[in-house]
Length: 118
Image 1 (spheres, rainbow, N blue to C red):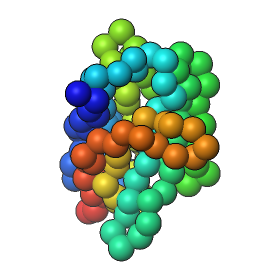
Image 2 (cartoon, rainbow, N blue to C red):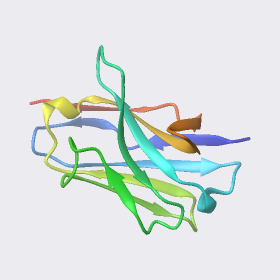
Image 3 (cartoon, rainbow, N blue to C red):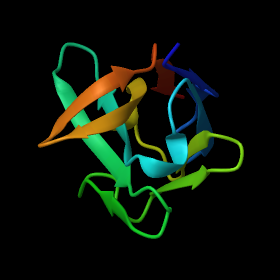
Image 4 (cartoon, rainbow, N blue to C red):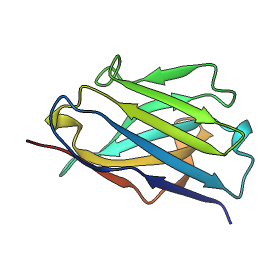
């Protein structure tokens, strides 16, 4: 069964840090580009970051560049998103997703809520 399961969400104060994890199963994780995508309240999906299969190259949205770091552990089938200097506008449900290609995804996690508030 192909599955992605996020964990690590929660409530954090502005300026704080949080790390999300995504456990993958049912496919060859080490050969796939993976993404983090978020959805803020009452807004559409926003791409956050991609990491290629071997972890050697990562891409970030301008809104998170310099504050977020994507990484992966292919030996453990884990994807991570380290978030620092969090802002209220980072409040969203964060999804990990398996990249199909052409800007589309074929597997999604259930999402992890991140709330940045004092």
